[in-house]
Amino acid sequence: MDCYIARSSAIAARLIGGEMMIMAADSTFFTLNETGTAIWKAADGHTRLSEIATKISSEFDVADNDAHRDAEQFVKELVDHGILRISDGPITDASPLPVSAV
Amino acid sequence: MSLVFELNQKALALGIPLSVHLDVTYRCNERCVHCYLDHDDHGEMTTSEINGLLTQLADAGVFFLTLSGGEVLMRRDFFEIVEHARRLLFNVKVKTNGAMIRQAEANRLRALAVEQIQISVYSHNSEVHDAITKLPGSHKRTIEAIRFLKAQGLKVVIANVLMVDNVQDYAGVMALARELGVPYTMDPTITPKMDGDTSILTLRVNGSDLRQVFHDPSLVGNVDEFCGAPPPPGDDIMDGYPCSAGHTACYISPYGDVFPCVQFPLPCGNVRKQRFLEIWKQSEQLREVRSIRARDLTVCSSCAHVGTCTRCPGLAFMEGSMRGPSAADCQKSFQRTGVPSANMMLGAHSDRRQRLIQIQPIC
Image 1 (tube, chains in turn green, cyan):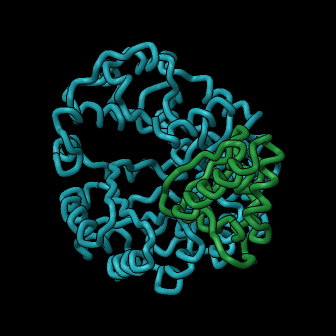
Image 2: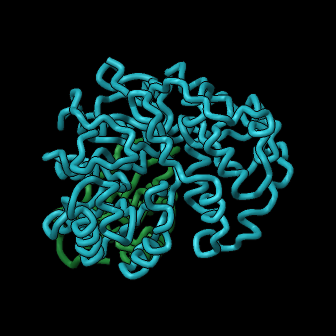
């Protein structure tokens, strides 16, 4: 939880109809729900995952423990597909956020 | 239902141009005998114009971006364009002949995480390939490029345009693709030249060869299924639209002209004069294309093949009407199934060699 996460630059992404569409480098296609999108957007390489989870907990009115557990699981899945990068220290080259489609 | 299908349905409902094919140049280092393009530069968009356009496309919701030509690497700024496109997080596919791709270019494409590189290969036999491209040594360089790209772990697809000159070689190209470890696609479509010259249509594969291709299980899989008689169409087919052109996809020329598709030369506007989204949303031509449903097609709506035909509205447009039949697709449906199309039965499939105007600068 004390790690840093950053959006990978090896993906394609677009916000379409309010949903974040992401194609991973392995061509797996994902749509992120609102909380998933919020975590992915917050993955700037400079914010700790624990801070992101705390913010999600208050923004989406989720119990703190649940938010931390779910965020960790979600991040692990996205890291496995190369959508997010994870590091013990800050990551300087997070991919930019895509422009809004609608 | 796949997520990509869902994405397409959503884009259709929201009027989002999910896929754009952008030709960055018509210049080319090859002179393929079947090519429809005029390879002179009549005022291509500059780097900053293209990059500005890409930003507009991203704003409009475009996800899939195909960069093609001409030969894309004839532009010295090609990698600058790809870099900008990837910064905007497009899913980028590049179409190329590969002759200018060496180790350094392959490395660069890998670093930019390009999704797929489609490379034209006309034959496993270098003499046949080079005779089609009119560039000696092009086969060798193209195959080397595929190896450079594969070594980088990039996804490469071989595209094999079939014409009279190489129709007997597709099995050899398939074997070559297997050896190289890349997928193979085949397309027997030859379109008129940009200036309306239809002489290259004589390169189209003849009926009996086309029939043989469609009945080859190594190409089509289950022949009985692929070549079976078409089932009667339901209301969903008759209320459906012919293809994605103008609905969720469009084409933009190196001069900024917008068309429903690269094979549909109906000018809809120019991004040098108007914002892309304004053209996409307000073009009368695109609105007309979007209004057409299968039941509106003048001949095809009564055709047995209406639900299964590969009818291209762009080729139909070039033959006279975007609501009419495309004789080349009638031929494909007939050779595939043995069932004549409604257009063929009307006797209208005979050569209608009128002057055709293909994609040209509007201004």
